[in-house]
Amino acid sequence: PSISAVASYTEGYSWSNSSGTTISQSTQLLTLDPSLAMPDDLITCTVSVTDATGTSSLSVSETILNRSPTVSVTTSPTTAAETETLTCTATTSDQDGETPSLTYSWNIVDSSGALTAPALSTDPSFIPDPSTVQSGDILRCTVTATDGYGGTDSAHSDVEILQMPFVESVVITPTPVFNDSQLSCTATVQDPDGNGVLTYSWTVAGTSMVGT
Image 1 (tube, rainbow, N blue to C red):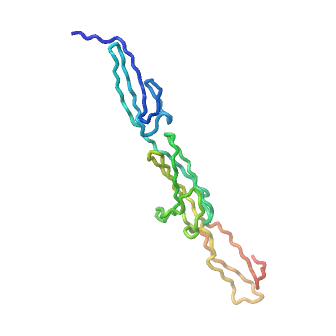
Image 2: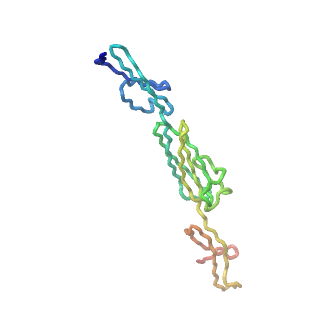
Image 3: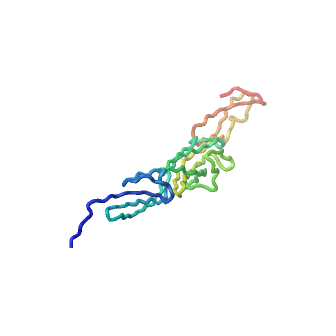
């Protein structure tokens, strides 16, 4: 037997979103943007073919995947005194057009590189408490960005607490001292950063004296 083919047919395309968002485009190609679909939405393409004998259609669907946000962090200042205000600034981006939520955590970095708990603060800016922070500590601000679909990213930046110089001991020589002695004041100083300036002052019976 012979088989005859229909000479012509028309085809049509329709797109739909399971979230209910209307997609009016009816062409074969569809360029998505956040106004048309977001992560976890189910996008369906239905193709219809019509000829003189009738219409047939078939649909296929794909789920929109989520892309995690990205975050970068800077701290100011990078070195600080024990009671100076520290500020953590985060910059985020999200390819899906979301606005990630941010959480902050300030912690001391111990000698092994691990973070001590609990956090010193969960605010973007804070003033360290001298009872918990001391000279030489490294403080780390960790920021975690989370989108509405569970995607996360974290970044951190460190602040070094200044190691303040201190006078360990002072001696006056020679001894004993007489009223015509030439005296020398010798100090032993600990200055881990090596940028301290040493100054001397002399007093006799409460009166300031000139010396070098």
